[in-house]
Image 1 (tube, rainbow, N blue to C red):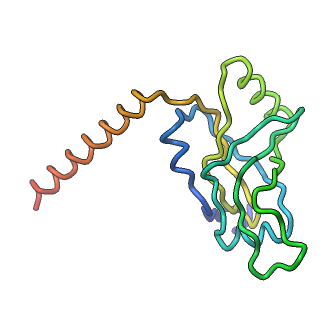
Image 2: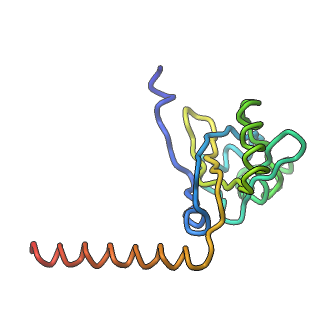
Length: 156
């Protein structure tokens, strides 16, 4: 394996997805982009905040992902929130679609990164959290912070 394929540069990390969903299984998918889109991704002008993945026929599409227009682009610049096809193997798509139907799961994009010069999106099979689950997570995080703070004070 050459040196270039090992490097990963995270462009966008969707923290909201981990707060709103219980992430069960993560997958790496390629994403079909145009020339000005990949240039915009390389300059970190991306947001996955409101994006989601939807099945259309037997393909998966990334919807509402905002890739800002390339600032040095011309009239052929892309539309910021156009649907983008996700590139996965057929067996992976079939497994994901069957899990969605049988278990009532959804697919959420968790991060976008460059790997070996190619844009990849990490998607996760997820189950939506209820309000009390979110409260439990917040309480657990606060308790961990207090423990860390107490330990720091003790060892000063």
